[in-house]
Length: 70
Image (cartoon, rainbow, N blue to C red; front, side):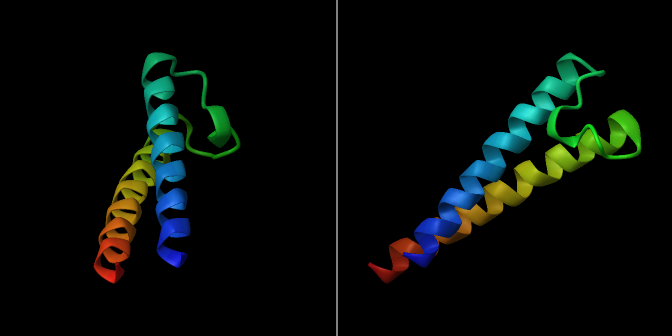
């Protein structure tokens, strides 16, 4: 159960990060959820890409751990 929750959290991070990065690349002025972040375009794009990578790693790791337990 714990790994299923972690997998869901990883997928949410993946979706939010990827969607935010794509939106940022299409419209540089629309920072979305990270509009409050100082540093402008580069900082928010870096944060979205980092959220995407963390989401991929967390979802993949928790999926592998959940399969190993079954």
